[in-house]
Length: 48
Image 1 (cartoon, rainbow, N blue to C red):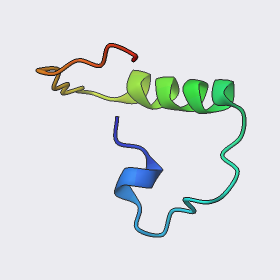
Image 2: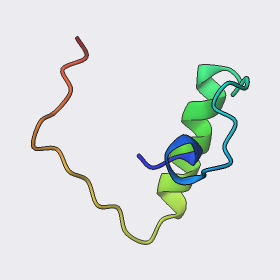
Image 3: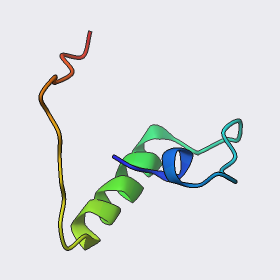
Image 4: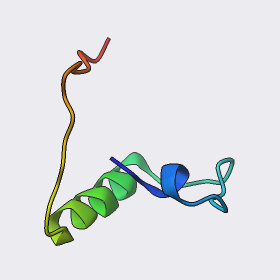
């Protein structure tokens, strides 16, 4: 997912982004507000 660390050249990459749950909830909110979601999954992550 394109988040600030990908799209914003001025993003603070070394800063404290908060708890994982807060990041998850923010990203889900962005997804739910989108009109369209394009996903490329030709090589899915297996979590390894």
